[in-house]
Image 1 (tube, one colour):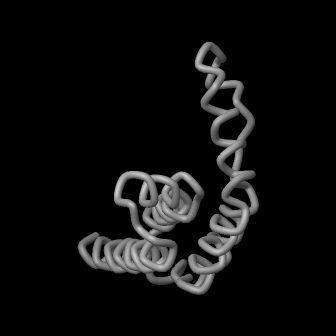
Image 2 (cartoon, helix red, strand yellow):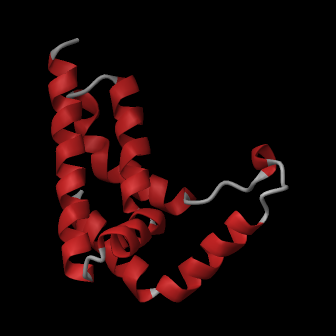
Length: 116
């Protein structure tokens, strides 16, 4: 999972101008119906689903789905941009923070499943 987070971080950094343009375009239509917005991140979600597949036997299905959703948020360009903009972090520190968040989410999912 952490290897995937690093790879996605590298892509966010490499394609930052393009991703920034996509983000700006998606935010520019404030008048639009958000329910009709196209779904983004399909490949990312599938990669995360595959990366956490080994946990399927360790955590309940609902927790597994929640983990995939949470990891999808931190792996995307939005998180990269916020850490860069709001915290003024350099790319290496952004990667460290995102990997830390991914590890924390996985630990939390495992811990929550022990209490069920």
